[in-house]
Image (cartoon, rainbow, N blue to C red; front, side):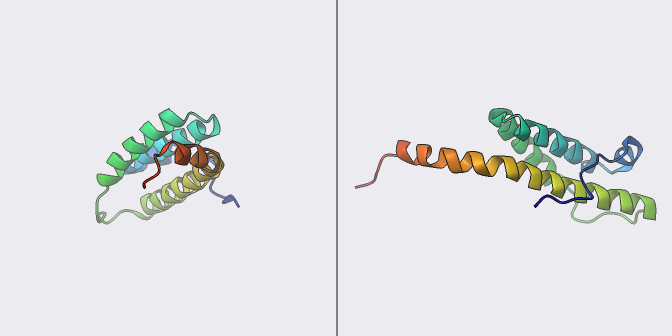
Length: 110
């Protein structure tokens, strides 16, 4: 089931208020949804690698933020999670189709 209230893009002014790398992570996550929807698997894999690099740059803790920035950050994280769910909805059926083909290519151990 898809999350409901988090599908809309955040307004640009809220995105710009996010600390980096949250801005980039959100924008990349939204791009990855489009790639999954069009089944652009190679580009999606490349974007996932980039997202891993961005995630590694995430601070362990955040400085004290004003309430509106905390809300923007919370909304961004919720949006990123919603994007992850939508990506998974497209990747899972593809993986179910491809897995038997990949398994057939792997030499059987004796």
